[in-house]
Length: 232
Image 1 (cartoon, rainbow, N blue to C red):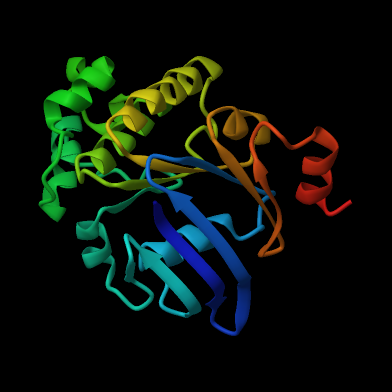
Image 2 (image 1 turned 90 degrees about the vertical axis):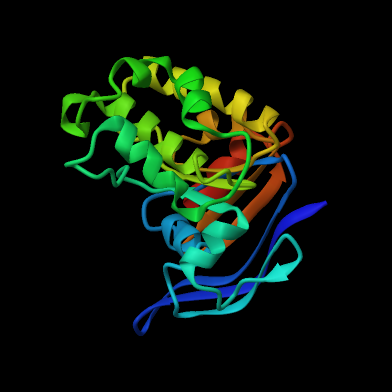
C-alpha cells in the first residue's frame, strides 16, 4: 500500500523555484533513498512534505489523505516525522529531555524512551548530559530518537551521516533495520549514493530540482547514477 504519494510538486523560495514537477512515492515499510548533489533540492523537498514550506503547488497525499495545505503540527500527528539536517537539538535540555520533546505529537505506538535507549545504549549512559557534551554521532542518535518518540509511520532523514566518523555512521545505519522492523518506512536523504542505496529498496536522484533517475536500488549501474547525479 502506498503511504506517501507526491505528484507534480513545485516548491518556491520567494520568486525562486527550487523543485519542479516532482513525482515521488513511498510504500508502507519501504526504505527509499533520495540522493543528489548540494543544491539539488533534497532538503527543500523534505521541508515541503512536513509543512515547513508554504509556497508550493501540486499534490501531496499521506496515508490516503491530502496534506498539501496541512499545518506542520497536524502532519506530525498524522505520523510523518523528520530528522532534520544539523540535528536541531535543544542546547539547554538534557538528552532525556530532548528525547521526551518527541512526545508532543501525542501519537501512541511502540517507540518509548525505553525502546530508544535499547536502540542507542550510549544515550542511556548519557541521559543527563547536554548536547554539547556529546559527540556528533551521539547527537545524531538523539535527533533520530526524538523523531522516533513521535511514533512516525514514515521517517524522513536528512543528511544524517554528514560530518560523522565512519564507525558512528555504521551504528546509525545499523539501527535502521530495527526501525523498519517496527513498521516505520524511511526516506534517506544523502549525498553518499552508495551508503543510501545499500540501505534502501528504491532510489531517486534529484538534479537541479527535478527527478533525474528512479530505480530499484540494486538495479542501477554506477554509470547511470553518475549521469543522473551530475547530469553528464
